[in-house]
Image 1: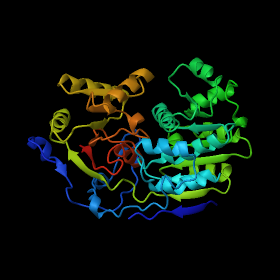
Image 2: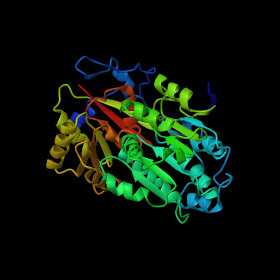
Image 3: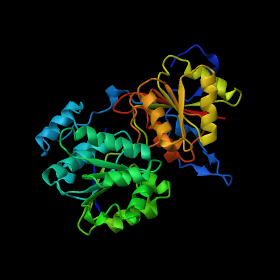
Image 4: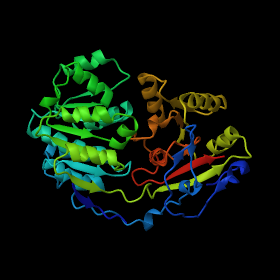
Length: 409
């Protein structure tokens, strides 16, 4: 069994139709039970109080005091300068706890809420590892192409001027371009499980020559049915290698993988509550209202300045986006029927505030770090409570306040 280390961490508007539908203001409830699915596959939640929770004012949250600073870490000085240039000042709990152990070569199991800085927790020490030994090869696996691309962008930012290169190998993009990239000099491969396995099967990624593997958002990979691909990739690694395993939850399947593939790993848990204390959560009842009209009444409020709306199906998301656009709102959509270029373009416009509303399926629920999202709206219920946690985790990030609203009816 692995060792465990725990970190201790202590609206207004003019629309009466929108305002009168809010419930649960000021109430606090006990931790909700897990959601369940009906035979039809539709999500059923026995208690809507799981969607209601008041944010804790920042002044009432005991700040985490890191044991280290980025200046203290035993890493390359040029890398330190890049970190400081990006605006990083003090390590988050997962960074503070994980970086020293990654530098020491230990296997890691990192359990942390979304938005806690997990990417830098492994990118920074692994870049230092390559700086010290240019023969190091590292593979990073993420569940979605968007997250893999985001990790690669973080790596490029921290590796500026260090002459360390990466290949991004994800589905939805031309595989032959990626095969060409793999013929060039690189130390990192960042990709999705299916595409990486395909490239391994074709003989373009020799996993036996890699010394480190990172599995990020491991619980999401399990949810998406990648467990066999994960096992395949880990079993192809050389006997002596380092494994970094990051997840927001720790299911039995994940525990089995840890026990089978990790060597005496150190467990670092900075997850205290299911959701961040910075997120104000509430419900909006729509039984006696036209749902689209109610959503529109909310979106035109000035405080709804950057909104991520979640729907359940690809068709439903696209239709909702078109209807909101028809009402004069600046909106884009992302879902599985959009190709890679379309999805990246929509995310770019949303990040740059060219549009202030993004409608998405759960493809956007995990891993994406989009700054300053003011509101997450669950226009349709998620399938599970875990999906809800990851959806609303797109707001209230980096210590900023956020609001999550869930339509019920």
